[in-house]
Length: 231
Image (tube, rainbow, N blue to C red; front, side, top):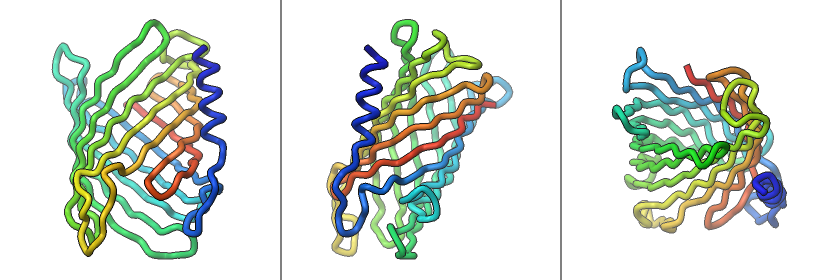
């Protein structure tokens, strides 16, 4: 039943939307990503970071270059993981337009993993962002993400495990007036994702998937290739 649901979802994500004058929704974009997490000397403190090269197409038409890093803290006898970090975002305009925008973000988040039965590994993440976007007023944003990993050939997420990965993330703006007479909606965007993953070895896994991103003005599919590294 789970595999059938994931297959239907994957087909739905791949169905193209009709384009508009400014953005070709039918053209598949691509995000190439590297994630790293580690703990300091097996303590409660750690580090999380990522580098993401996002394109409006398969490669070359920059959507965003995102570099992020921060500290994590896991209280004793709990499954909670708190994070505090900084993100630098370099955003490019769609197509031949060379216009770029710089953004700095400070974020705080909390993650809470949950295991459902013997084969479903879920994780909830709540994130609060303070955004400093070029030529805009100071902005805040709220994010909620729920992710699920389902191993296929094993019951545990370990070496040589093939698994399905799914997440949905909702973004909510904290204000509508962003300065210079410009406004945004309270709903910022939603990301729906599905991938096939493989544990190369404990601490190293790769994923290949598709993410459907929906905003108030456009909807687009993005190929995602990611490497996840835990030291």
